Length: 103
Image 1: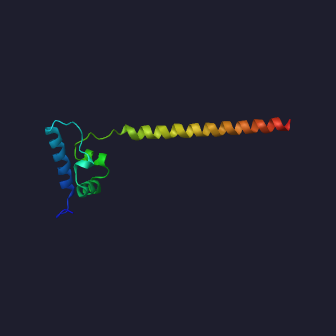
Image 2: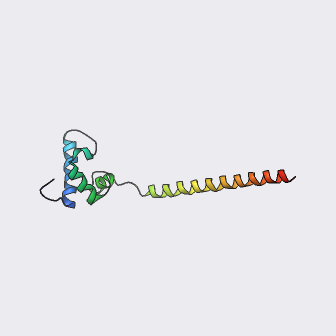
Image 3: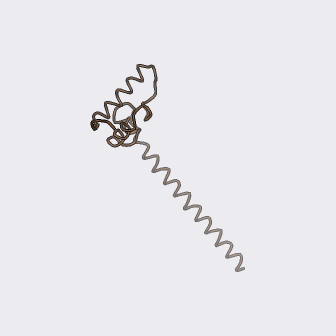
């Protein structure tokens, strides 16, 4: 384990430094967890959250768009509507079957 604890700023610095090293090597990828020790990964995720959010916090990666939340809401609404329609159709079919049996 490391001799000293990492701070939030240290974690940001590690990500930015690794991104610059990768660019200097001619690579265009983002820093990966495998580029760091287990302790560093643990500290980065503890301070900055999931890996993609940590890269965004360090300014290495563009933040994801806010429209994603809206798209997810619309997708859930469509799914609920399809489910309601399926239930309604099943109930109508059941009622039609009962009416046929009565006649």
